[in-house]
Length: 104
Image (cartoon, rainbow, N blue to C red; front, side, top):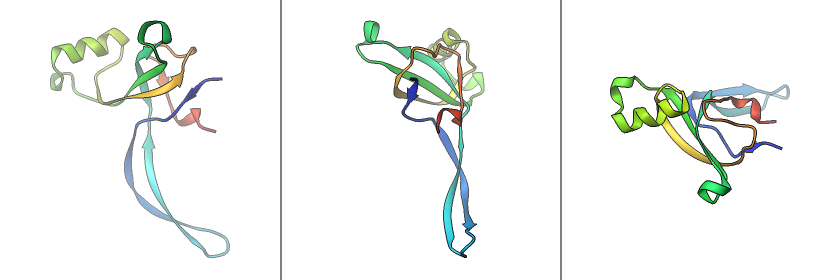
């Protein structure tokens, strides 16, 4: 079973949902992904399993050369936000696209 603890997202705003009984539920609207796998951490190499994910494209001119090299290695355009999530990730490879479909 493949499991990632989360995704990177961006808050778009707030809204209200009216239920059939007239109750109002206040909600937050979030753009969750798509995220790209930048690096895969393994037990053999790093001592733990995790995926490094990137979100929201960045203009290449805004990144320094070492950062550009990191993204080029995974075959992904530079990303504005980078985070690492613990994951059992045998089926993911660098450059793969991860969307909100991973959640049930």
